Length: 325
Ligand code: GLA
Image (cartoon, rainbow, N blue to C red; front, side, top):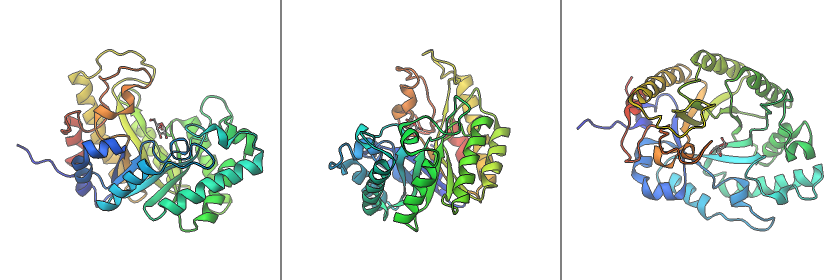
């Protein structure tokens, strides 16, 4: 049998190889995670809603379990995420004016930093603040409505003040789409003008085998890097369904899996070329079995197989295109 190389060792000269995990995945697939990956992101457990459901209530157990696994196995940990319009409990916004909301965010950050800053090497300070449907730069979220146009700068300034040595990331999706990318670049300009408050931009990279344009990938890496920030690939997966495809037909055909493998190989060849600006490449999950894409955008998509490992924990064809170069 062919020996399975460890991705984290293959990529050690280039960047961290990460995975989004849950405590359950760490129990079920601990060995695979430990041997293949050098960085972890909590899939949900460090988001405001699960960890801080009420003003005076914190539920640390799940995030603690992930942090302990990272520490015990010498893996890096990314902190995901502090300021986000989704998965944030309603009480943050209830009856809040700008100062109240900012002080709630400050309290949230303070506790997150005091508990996890010793383990976390990069924080997604703001997630998905940019609008991608209308021409507005920022999304019409409660955060935006209450704090205003300087919401991203305020959040980063606060984080910087609380944790001067923190490594701070602005994270978003549709990061290759030119209109959206221009807006993300505008946000990076604002953070730079306010005192170089962001260390990196997080490109989520929820992609699919139909729409991916590798020229846009190169252009995007160049444009983001030109802002003087590093780049983290934070949520990579490569769906077998096009972005407009809402069916549940079996897309895991041999042709699609072969195309996926070839694309994964080409993507990582580009990432390697940019290794001086890319800190880490994180997959959004460990195996196809636990991928969020089984239930998004439609439930019942067991046929979607977006990651490098199959439900049996074994490497798929695409793994070899990433591992062998
Ligand atoms: C976004 C978030 C992630 C996760 C994915 C889907 O990209 O940043 O935390 O919720 O959506 O699972």
